[in-house]
Length: 260
Figure 1: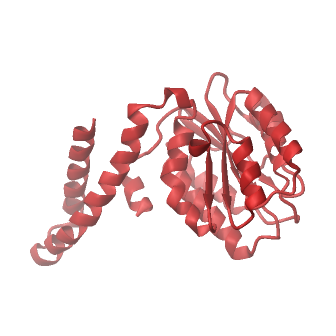
Figure 2: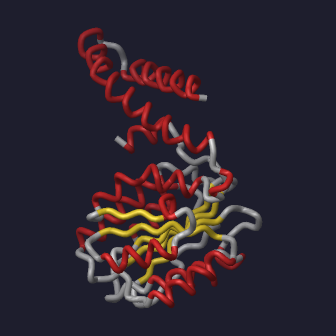
Figure 3: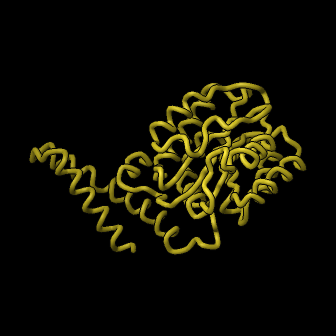
């Protein structure tokens, strides 16, 4: 359903530099790694990626970390998805401190493609951590010192990892730290994560952020309600598909108007 809604709505239309910290450890199964990539691609569908809007970079990490693409390298979702597909599993660790350091030392610099005066946010994905809590905290402090906000996303049963990630995330923790029992469950947090990233200067979050999520929820309810009706129109009255889409778009735009 997220894919359907993203056809009509761009959840985040701000100027923003985003870095995803992506674990590549072979300690994850191949299936888990692919589910993680699918989750990131789902995120990208809710970002208005363009030269003058949102820029995205990837920092794959395991025992060490690297910036696989610069923030100013690709300006379309399709190009970013292709770059994501090229990231392969390697190493055996989950050195989150290295990922954070790579983002602050390289990613969020002019050499990494960042833009001056544009809000910066790192979304650190980590099912485990092989960094010490002290090393992770020090790296997170350095990241925040360059003006970046830190969203941490964990999954799995490792309680110590959850504690570390929650401790190093930006404030307030309820907005910048997320956890799911498994990697598939991360999809349930997509709207919340994107909303937090979009309004990463949290003290500026207000009516717009609230309605961004509300609009997505209303749109999903409307879509579920109206699609069976559209099917009836197409099957019984032979309405063309484009006309059916026009009806859906009209209803969604009306809901957007009343919400604002």
